Image (tube, rainbow, N blue to C red):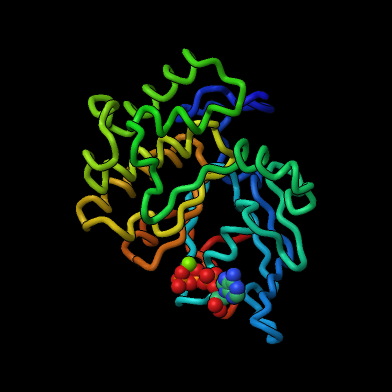
Amino acid sequence: MNNNPGNKSGNYGNNENHDAGSEPVLRIRDLRKIYMQGKIPVPALDGVSFDVNKGEFLSIVGPSGSGKSTLLSMIGLLDRPTEGSVFIDDVEITKAKESEAPRIRREKIGFVFQHFNLLSTFTAMENVDIAMRFTGTPKNKRKERALELLTMVGLGDRIKHKPSELSGGQQQRVAIARALANEPAILLADEPTGAVDTKTREVIVNLLKGLSEKGQTIIVVTHDMDVARQTDRIITMRDGTISGDTGGS
Ligand SMILES: Nc1ncnc2c1ncn2[C@@H]1O[C@H](COP(=O)(O)OP(=O)(O)OP(=O)(O)O)[C@@H](O)[C@H]1O
Ligand SMILES: [Mg+2]
């Protein structure tokens, strides 16, 4: 019922509690996911463990099929691992009841996808507002916050535009505003720049960088090393395991 749980400042994008490097917001322990392809087991994740600190901007790279999207869907509680644990803010989300999953997703995770996934008949404002519909936030507060977020991503003058009336980069910025609406502990992005040109890519990456500097934890999956190089830390996956990690933990 509350979109502002725990010790959040209520002040997205201006987090006074920002203390990157000291507090793991995400802990992953020996994560395994085996998909069954008929009778043949396909190990998509084969023992993955790492920590992510608050405010860290992490990229995950690796060849197609190495398990990147599978890993994101475990962190985002879209699917369950075969074995292992994911903790967000010290809550073991992998143990949550199925009935609890939507609330945890809404409160802890913001999702950004390659193809934006905006509602086509809704305006930019409505697309952000809808993320807050089930949180108990009153309508006037939701509107205020949607406007603040859209202004922050540079679209304060586009709030009444529908997705078809916006460029790809603008649509992705609406999607980022929507993902931040409930002050998620972690922003997860799967190929957020995969469908935009290189100039727009820089706009999106700079926006994400700015958010992480203000304390937002961000994990981005990308094939684009020019994007990965601009993040704080790069984890490389191969065959469902971590084959490289430029961060220490
Ligand atoms: N629902 C599923 N059922 C069966 N196998 C799956 C399923 N989802 C993924 N896999 C398999 O798990 C492995 C990891 O897939 P995943 O989508 O995580 O890779 P990825 O690193 O995101 O690849 P890409 O870069 O192409 O997006 C692949 O071998 C894939 O075929
Ligand atoms: Mg993928």
